[in-house]
Length: 73
Image (cartoon, rainbow, N blue to C red; front, side, top):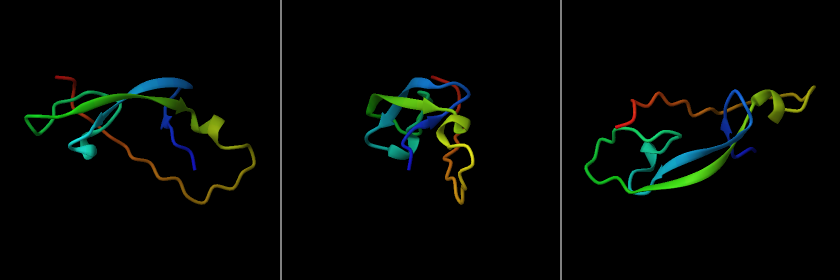
């Protein structure tokens, strides 16, 4: 298992963890459907899938949590 964000270039990114509404967490701050979001910025690794999966490896399952957050407030 890999705990990382997937992107088009490796590196690090800020992850906005919403402590009192985790489902709203993501790589971008956004408009929240609650008046009091408690946001804890974290630093996460970003990997390319091509780099994370060894060449020739058999992949049976990949779970992706894809978000399409609205623009920043």
